[in-house]
Image: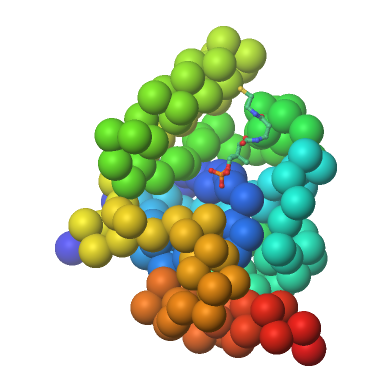
Length: 166
Ligand code: PNS
């Protein structure tokens, strides 16, 4: 089979607090489609994250250290301004269920209104991971539940450190 990717870079934005197996699966599948995937970690002042932006970036960089097509960056403020400051024209978002659709559709339309040249592409999550979210991972972990099936072992370790206070 020939490599018929056409030089497109996609930006996969999100909070990634923390990155889950659902995100990892989507990133792995997206590098088979796009030449380069920039994982853009949102620095959102309104939320109180479990992990700092640099901790989140470091976990993602470690997980994808052997995947040169994946780069990790951060952005603050409007996603569309970050997109306009770079070369990429594609925003990549994952859809897990119908419940994701309304918000994602609204965001895609607003982003297109702000910058018509930037397109949003959606990839469906794998059926295995439709129920996985960073929020669920944090809730489970904070109550002593096992999150080993939901996150990379490296992330599981970091979560344990957070909740054990070490
Ligand atoms: O991991 P999430 O919470 O699904 O990520 C959502 C995120 C960070 C991609 C989204 O909230 C976002 O783009 N935030 C930056 C501010 C912005 O541009 N909002 C959309 C304006 S319509």
